[in-house]
Length: 395
Picture 1 (tube, helix red, strand yellow):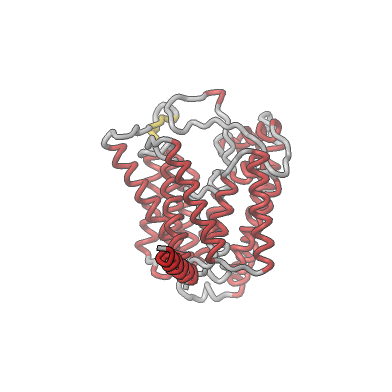
Picture 2 (cartoon, one colour):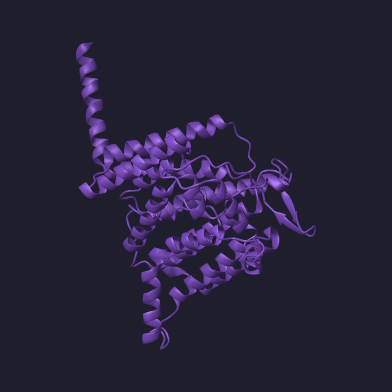
């Protein structure tokens, strides 16, 4: 009996060692965890009503699998180990200081992406998000879940199509379009660009969401310029210098976006016509940002910032509405200045690592411009493009 147990133990030990030596097993484990993460995070933006315990169990399962992959399969240089340690240490301090777990989950998954093909990450994101959105759309049409339809100015219908708010649905479509363009890259044809314009128009007509519709158009223009065939214009010295200037400044857009929104919000005065008109253009974001900066001061590792949005219900909050949409201000206030600086560094390194991939740079540029007004920068339900930091570049 003892001999049988020893033999069984040795056999299992050999299998575990053999399993851990195959890097592909680690990648498959991670992509499975990522699929669960994308499905669950996207579900939370829909009107599907699942018990919170399911999301909690899913979150811990994902963290367990990704941590297992990092410990068993990944190998790091001393520099990478230092960065990883700092990232995890800061995210744990944020949990302690602010009670928000999102930065920790984001950082663990970010580190778990090491050596995983970025194309596969985007494919998993696209499959999970598209499946959940289609399920929500069909369920809302069949009255299985509530279909929230908001009315703007007593005339314009804003459809949510099974999500918690029209802007959430539009944001999902925007990021899915980013993912689709990245996956097909050099195979993009004029018909794909036309499809992007049509999708943008449909989202605007049915959801009345200006930001995501505009950024979808900007995305199409950017991808179109990358796809532009070699012409006299595209080889001209002025064009090449302008192109290089834009590419070299992409890593600094988030810093610029943060400083712009911080200054505009901090000095906002409704009595000044310029501020009043610009705030109206941004749907009141300067006024809300000003209130947030007044009520909550600078912290190193974040704080509790209670927000009340209109999502998930047709009941208007009226004067109780308070939500900071700007990603940079949101991270600054909720997670602290240290984490915001780390996000700037992550963006910078993503741009440097993928500097030869113009499609990625265009997509990331449009995303960070979108995040000046929207709050999805580190939300994995929407944005998977920062997961490129340690991922393997696509061929």
